[in-house]
Image 1 (cartoon, rainbow, N blue to C red):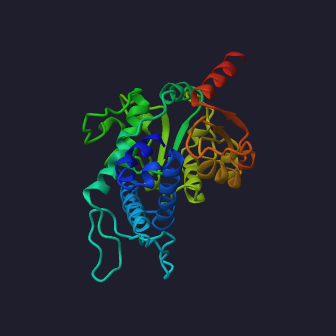
Image 2: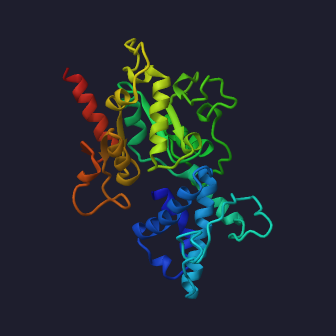
Image 3: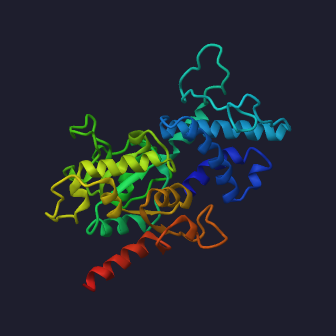
Length: 317
């Protein structure tokens, strides 16, 4: 969320009220726009969706400054002062359609800012340690091209440069194109030379759904079913002979995430156990209660703490 908040600063600084927002205020305002667009356009690429959300948030802020922000009466959107367009950044709307103007370069730049969102400092090392004991599967709300940058940072334990203009992620950590896998899955640990900790990567571009929609989680379970070795311990030959049922897969799957609403709630609803990475000071962290209603079974403040707990458990056996 820090990368998102930093990328929003040029926009927020233009408006007196928004420039005074806290980090939580800013992220909440953005996510309220983003979630509406995700629900209406689940197939829109995440970088395009970011650009569109930035555009709509700008329109809302302009309307608020002018005192003219009103909700659309035709039910086409829940946003004030701007209608969500089904047109992706860079495309032209159909003749006669009522849409927000195509995004300017500013919105597209924001949409591409995800390539410089740095992971948490403990994540890369922790993931490498955890990958020794578990098959790690990504279910991300981003797209192939955008996740390739995050994939690189987590695999190589590097951080994006503030000054370097990175145009393209290394092919080593990009989704294979063309993909020779029979079911078109992204299995990065099978790539020669890769240091990836991930056995399988699924994005919203693969599943056609944004979390917290159940469709993405179900797609992940089905992908695991098609590759039963993912249910075995890494390096083990104890692979199921017959395809496991979805319930059997759920019983051997653990969702590890920070977001209670995007990850833990749908995991609970689907009967998947989860571990909450409760990063202190994180944006939109619940301040009341302990989040138990979201179904998590264990809680750690960082991914590094989880990794250390697993290491100690393994050594004690």
